[in-house]
Length: 65
Image 1: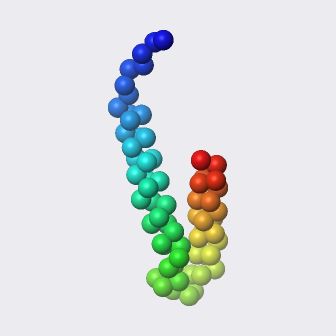
Image 2 (image 1 turned 45 degrees about the vertical axis):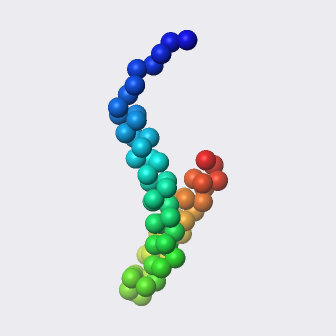
């Protein structure tokens, strides 16, 4: 079996990915839960599809992980 050389780039990217998963997904859930409090009503027509896309993307990511 050959030893692979440690890659700082891959280690950094994996660390960033883990931080995004552990901190980013809960932050997105809170954001999606309270979006009506900080977005004006005239932007609801744009915000609803965006929040729906984000929610569906996170659901699929967690399901497929």
